[in-house]
Structures are given as structure tokens and as C-alpha cells.
Length: 336
Image (cartoon, rainbow, N blue to C red; front, side):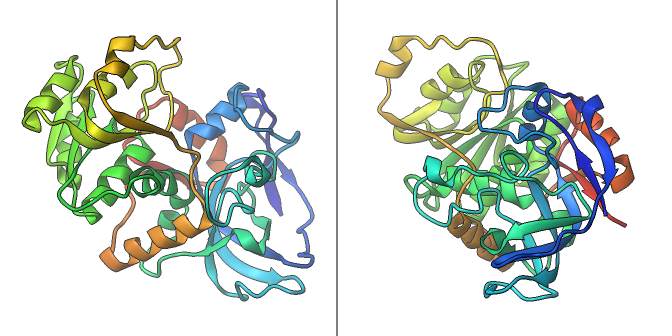
């Protein structure tokens, strides 16, 4: 089989393709013919050398992938040969809150999915919604599960409540789509009028261009009659957290997913004192959340937003394109 290998801090130019033997599944393991993978910010963090969790040397990168089970080891009961599955990023995290005992993750401390075949523990396997292609299903494990956790893992989102999403990255787009399934109203922020139109087409009830409206929290307050939003899917970090605190409703929730702004954060104590809210740090999600999300996706026929699809042989170029930050939707690498 052909696989790609990479190292922590090795950069995109350090990604190399190799010929390797196809592994055989041992007890409670499955062999998956990988049909598609998708890229996330975590992949760039690993290549740039600042990923917060352990990364094995000579790693098969990329956490997100989907494919067909082609062989199973002794004792496997959760799947059978021929099943269409995606891989849960944290194979040991089955349910409940996150803990370090469950922190082994695909494409990090464990080999990932950027290979023609992937050897996985059966606990990692999640059946994919029947209406989705492999390319679409490959977008789910990180960004979609993170968005689902952000909306439902703390105080559950209720119909009629309001969600704020930031930008048009993978988590934010899934949060917009999934919030609509919950029956919530969505206010989105973005950097351009063109993206605003696309977010509206996806179902956003209102969109704020933060370049032309830099104090967007005031606009959010105005749109909500002064109340603020119930849930904020916070991806900006230092660049947006203080405004998020000013935009959230009393007893609301900020689900802190990422930190696109890498500058040092300094949040005024007045911003913290002026609200009564919960801030949750999101670490993707567990398998039970993945399964619940897939049930909702299947019931409503939701389809992920895909920007571009690259051939397996062009995987390095896919990374370069993703790093430019121009995509609206997920970047997928598929096997023809």
C-alpha cells in the first residue's frame, strides 16, 4: 500500500509518500480501505510543531477518514466486512467527559488515515449515514463532532434559542448547519460580503461583516433585543473572546473550540464581571456524540460543505491549498 508519513514540526515539505506492507488485523482490530480523508487545523498544527497532545514520530497523518471494512480480527463484533465507516478520532473515548486516559488520537499519538489502508481498533468505527458519500463522511470526525459537542455537550441547545458562529471554517459551518437542525436561530460573523451571501444560503438568519463592523458584539446585542445569544461557538481566541463575552446572554454558554488568533490574550476583568456565563473548552467529542450526530444528519439529510477534492497523489498540494486559508468548506483527499 501507499501511505504518507510526517513528523511534528516537519512542515508540509516534510510529508513523504512510501510503499508499505498492508497490515493484518489482530484481535479486536479492523482493516479499512480508506476512500477519503479531510484536513483540519490540527494537521497544520502538527506540521508547524505546536500541537498540544503527543505526536508519534514518523506519523501517518490526518485524523479524519472514511472507508470500507475489508478485514477483521478475532473478537470483532461492532462491524463486519463491507461496512462503510468513519473513524472516531479518540478510539478509547466512548462516552462521558474527556479524560487523559482517552487522549490517544488518530493522526497524532496513533497513526492516522492518509494511507490506502488503515488498521484501527474496532472501537474507533462509526457507521456513516447512508446518504453520504465517502468524501462527505470523511469530513465528520473532527469538525462536525466538535460542532455537535459545542452545541449539545454542555447545556443542550433548545429550539428558538440563538447561536453565534464565527467565520467559515469547518467547525463554524457545521455549527451553523447543526444549529438549524436544533431549531435555533443563527447569527454568523464573516470577513466579506461574498462569504456572507454563502452563509445566508446555508441558513444563517443574520450575518455580520466584522471588517466593516469591528464592534460586532454591539450589533449582536441589537439583533437580539439587548439580550445576547445563548450559545457562541468561539474559534477566534484572543481576537474574539472579549467580544464574545459582551455578546453572550446571561446564563449563556461560550464553547471555546480553537484559537485562530495566536497573539497573547488579555481580557479585561470588566468583560468577565459583566456577564454570567459558562465557558467550555471543547476537545472534539466522544463516540456516543458521533453516533448521535450521525442519527440527526441521517434523519435530516444534511450534507457537509466541501470546498475542494484532491486526488491521493496530490495530497501535499491539498495541504498547501488548505494552509492558504482560502477555502469555504472542507478540503478532501480521495482515492479514485
